[in-house]
Amino acid sequence: MLIWNKAMSVGVLLICYVIWQNHLPPEENVKRVNVVERSQQSVILNTPQEQNASSSIRSSDIRALKAPQSDLVQMIQGYIQLQHEKSIAEAELQRYVNWVEQYTKDSKIEPLWIIAMMWQESRMIEDSVSSDGAIGLLQIIPSTAKWLGVNKSKLYEPETNIKTGIRYMQYLLNKYDGNLRKATIAYNQGEGNVDRGKARSWYYNQVNKHYSKMKELLEAL
Image (cartoon, rainbow, N blue to C red; front, side, top):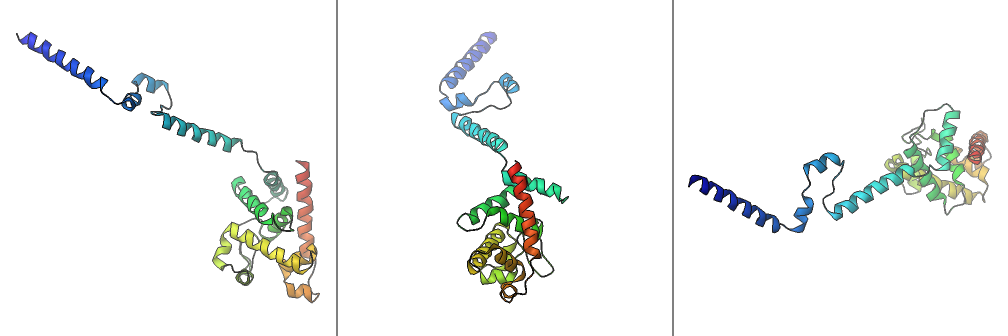
């Protein structure tokens, strides 16, 4: 009798289990993964939504890895090596190049000229500060930034620094009727010195030297 009762109990439990299985929502069935399958798969996706999301993430990661390096970035890296200077992370250089291209787009300034100026001014060290108090990638004097409506603290932000430097160069180009030499010298030595004929050309010559070599490297890519 005892054996019979135990058999009945087991039978009832089995019936309950089958009923429970049949009444599970479809998504719960999808989520159950066999232990063997887990050991055979590196990633198990539970729902179609998760599968799509994971696929998108992987695709974007692959696209990022395969994204072509900017010619300007590649050129700058080569120029840094030629100058025997400390290397700069590719991601940082790409950001600088993107901002230079963005903010020179509607101006009369060639992006490569700004990059040459940036190299002469700071060696592309974004937190650089000169003995005269000039700040950042394009070594902007706080008083000049204030005149352009930019707070001194913002000059430590690479994008703001680049944008402000390009704005100032565009102003100088307009003032000197598109004369790149005068505008470049005024950027470094001040408008007053240029206007009084007291400015020297060494800064322009240095920037032009960087520009010419950079252009040569760029054309060789």
